[in-house]
Image (tube, rainbow, N blue to C red; front, side, top):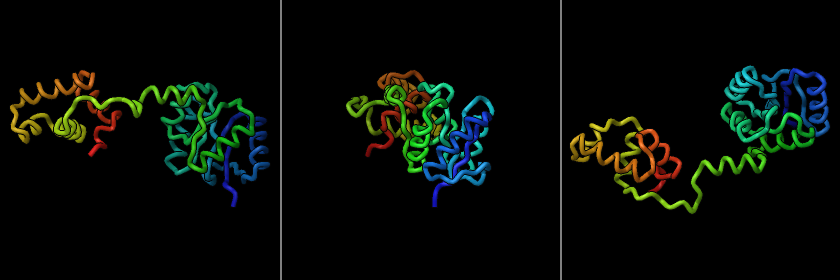
Length: 194
């Protein structure tokens, strides 16, 4: 059975043209997003954001149609749970392809967006910072909501010494706060290592 798709766009001629392209590609069209397996959504602020959140919460595959398809526009769509995003003014065949990939669990992204995402995460060749497994454990405890006082007690340090040791760990990670250290450890996959 063909996936059921809804198009949410206020411009009727645009919506009808996209629905025709989807029907030609073998999709079943519905006017009711609640009846759809997937939804093409023109992501405009704020209505599109609220709609995207509701559709994702309802388990729909959402492909955002972006009026501004730069890396920030893609990030905005993904923040609202979109499975993929494509420029609003893309060729209908490109939009159909993006939808097909999203339904299959894949996202098609522009190279500039991929480069922006990659620049935020360490690569495979990023050296592991000079932190011990015990120190990673402390960071994991902090991430889980443990207090510094409790960690100090469990490790045999005074609370003051524990704060000093943690500050040294933060410095080696290149950060200045507990929150930044937890984020850095997560980005570096330190919590995932055995």
